Length: 118
Figure: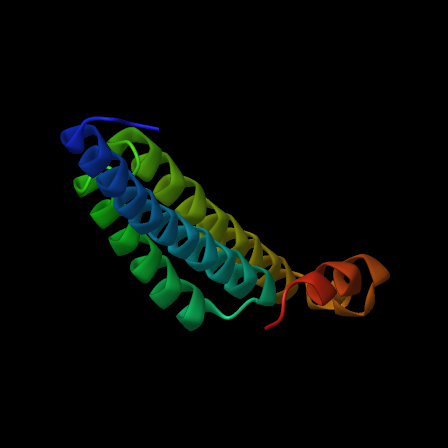
């Protein structure tokens, strides 16, 4: 335990800052899970709004130095690429289905469609 008053005050400040930083990091994790869940569900509108919210929170966390700016950039990039990959796969599937209408009844495409809600 600290004997000097300034050291005791620094301990109190550290506790306060740690609690605040943990709350921000916890919120980031929650928002990231929300983005991933929306992408997996296939809800494009919800995924885009939650990605925007997540990106904003990540930038704010980086600005206040809770996380490193490169970490914020990496997290935003990974979330955006998940959304883009899912929408690209859906676009490719729809292209094939419209190009070759005979294939609509094939099992292969039904398996793909099951993973991607239209």
